[in-house]
Length: 466
Image (tube, rainbow, N blue to C red; front, side, top):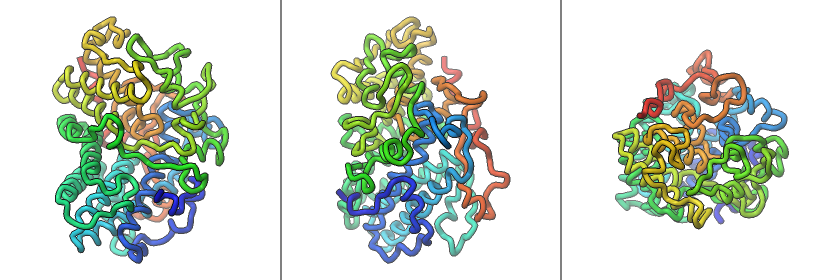
């Protein structure tokens, strides 16, 4: 495994390593293919490290149970809580992928450039979704822009869409030398990367409320129900080499800090819970046992062998199930296409049935969403009931994934995730303290946790769906 040859420490050790203090341009001494591997390792930690843990606590998939996680549970964070991940994103991912792209342009290695561009787009999309306005056009150019400007969030999304379009064209060209196994995700399989790029385009169009474009790109996105086309973070059983970061945190580094006590997500999945979502066509017992252990609300993350957070459990970043649920939501909101939305939801359920069935997720019929149907016990309109099912299914299909927090904010918490403190749902992460202290162009005063980002400031159209 490629990761075994790399420095892969536990969360705290990795983000505090001295290499994060080095200027990004020093990496030009290494071959671009080797830099790509390092950037992708950084990308993994950005997706399933500290940001994912806080996202999971804030979306009630996990529970902050001790020390600073008790504060996180009540949405109390400081800028320093995000410094390491902010630095990771800019120095070990964006800074490095821009070096790769520059060198690949000089050598016309479009295959390498395409993979590097998608890797960078994923990091940039994650940052702007969580933080709002971010350094982008002037980022990773310390000599020319020692104080990079914070570009408006909508402009960053537009630039990311352009990047992903260019990456698709690069990969379709077939030009250049493949990075091969240096690409730890797909071994430079261009077709799989192209589909991931389309799903990312769909994800980010969903963020910005462009449902027609989200639908169009999702229909060209990841299309393998067996998960073979999913972007997955690979993990192994070597504790401080390639282990799953959730396992490291829960079982080794901060035991007891984060549980799932009385959390919303396991309560929805637990057949013994008073709010169990199962019905005549849905059996959540296997999915509950995959993600969680415990009973009567005393839940913990399942870190046992075969569990979602086991030491060697791979972590899903962009998946077929997410892609199908984007199709479902976008079809419903773009043009009220109930049938396309239902078909996509059933595609997602069929994929889940492969994993947790057989028979756990039987296909829904349109009649199930009529008032009083098994998927509409609240008696809503069929369209609104279908949307609720789509969003709730996505929430439970993305346990531990940052995208669950992005969905909760952009949909104005449509599915009703309980608020743990006060009467407001958190809207963003805080800019890293180092950035606030060192960058003269950083917002002053910086926005707080409850201030919506630009793309989430308006009302979610699903709220008025009839």
